[in-house]
Image (cartoon, rainbow, N blue to C red; front, side, top):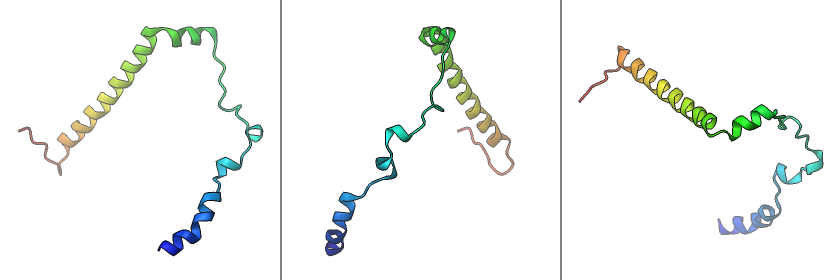
Length: 83
């Protein structure tokens, strides 16, 4: 096993990933660029709007968990015991 690791060590040190071989000027990043309007910029800086976004995500997750619990409660094969 040690001989095999010494044999493969040079290949592992020189090996490149596909991300290493790409040059930055060949990558088209236009799909990731977004144009933000003045209203969007102001909304992203507004603490109340960002708080509302976080709260909505939290409520959505809690609703999904609640729906899953109700599904298991109403399932015939699974018994939900309240101890």
